[in-house]
Image (cartoon, rainbow, N blue to C red; front, side, top):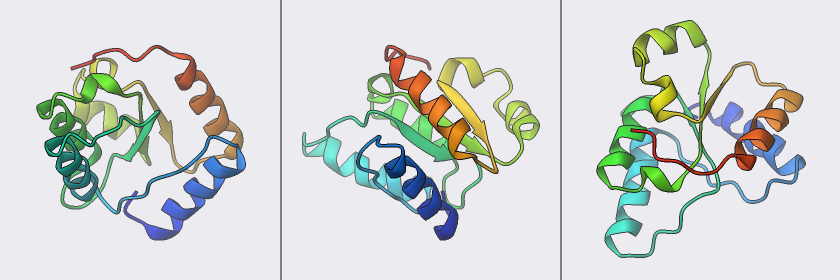
Length: 130
């Protein structure tokens, strides 16, 4: 999430729900760079869940997922794409939604919906999508 206030609110909601630590990055490129550096040093430990905003500067959520695939670590994660416009996101993904993302959630987020989505996602086995 590139908007600091929304990023903090989502993190607080996740913590309130008891899902554990949250790692924040301002955009997809920053997240990718941090992960890539750890992969290159063999110090990368997969996340239980990656939430990424669809619409961010520098590298958006979909580009971020493809970049993780290029690092050969995409198959080690569950994903949630956060979007303000599900219809626009689906058009942009053009059929890749089922292949590359475990689930999506629309803004504005409610804590109940976020809990439902995360809980269901964490019950799913990790599978290779792209």
